[in-house]
Length: 538
Image 1 (cartoon, one colour):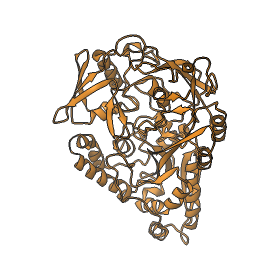
Image 2 (image 1 turned 180 degrees about the vertical axis):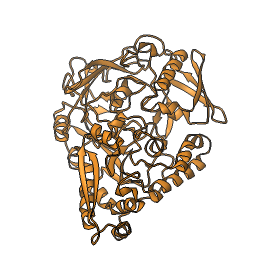
Image 3 (image 1 turned 90 degrees about the vertical axis):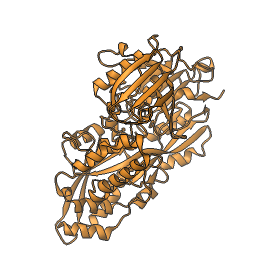
């Protein structure tokens, strides 16, 4: 979090695997996201090995799938698998922009937002066969909090959890927070049988529609899933009972496999292939806005970029319009840090290139065409064509200003390790939120941290930190005030501190075989396909 454009993993504070994820090819966050795995299938996608309900759905990620099996600490690419093995109390609906029932059927909160009571779905079993009841839910969430990994911060407001009776669970919070949203997170919100977790955290004791069939790390078909026969939702013949993740790093290879019917889903095509897919028989395309944006983070702590004038000049040197035009529909110009569709999105903050102003700021700082040459190091995700495009455009623009960009493509793990040591002037990564709330960008990327995780601009501002810490409570109790605070924070971080440039928000462009029915993208769960919701055309 978390991929083609590396999904960055979601970033979150945690680490993303997403975090880490962040990385690669389509990266996840931040890389926050870690790259996704590939998958493969036993039988070619379009074929059945017998009755229709034995059909295998084949997903072709461009990276390895699983970095961490533990549902409490997972924070990367494995979201694409775990979202089908585990369920949360709620699931976010990106159409209605609300949390909807999942393992909880209904919930209430007190007027002050500090007490939340959830009614649990009856008759749900874990994959172990044990019942999913309030005691099990309490034990699971307490274990996740205790592990302090991944996105466990989503439970920070919780003071105590009580199993009121077998089907009722109550949370008492230290401060008001939107717990129904937090509980829909794609990380750290899964409900699992805490008694069934192995020493290494590997458990298949979720409540979801699928369980692990096979896992072979590093193999092309890395992971296969099979239907959980006792799933509370039941099964119909036209649903996919098997799923395979076939890791396919090359986008052109993935596209060929879709055309042959050997793969059912490719998470991202480039604009040329996406255009071709739209008119290819046997293939359908899907396109939707996402909550994933590209961050260009400037080192505020040391080096030439410690000078705010240099950082502002770099912001102004980026050709935002040219970059978005070159993406040909795969990205939309950003307005601030928060993508459209989330509380805190602020229209009117779209950045513009201004080279004369950039040159004037650099001259004030002692650099420019007739002054000293400025050399800056930049790192970005290897294999990410969109990030490469940004770097290519920016390098040629900066050359005119006597600034040399020493850009290095790196795999996410190496890029992130260097970033944690403050080893570059500019760090390029993707971010998307852990749950559909703008808090993730601020808490994870811009709140100061003694040991950098995702705050790779190394911004340290006590006033900004204090404002960030108030966001969850404001969101729960006073949305207009939260909007104002988000606006103010974005002005401080982007305009005054110039810690980051935000060129675009990704638009997801998928290809699927034509026989898949019912696919709907949900940007709150980046690159996740909810296989249970699909039907195979007979």
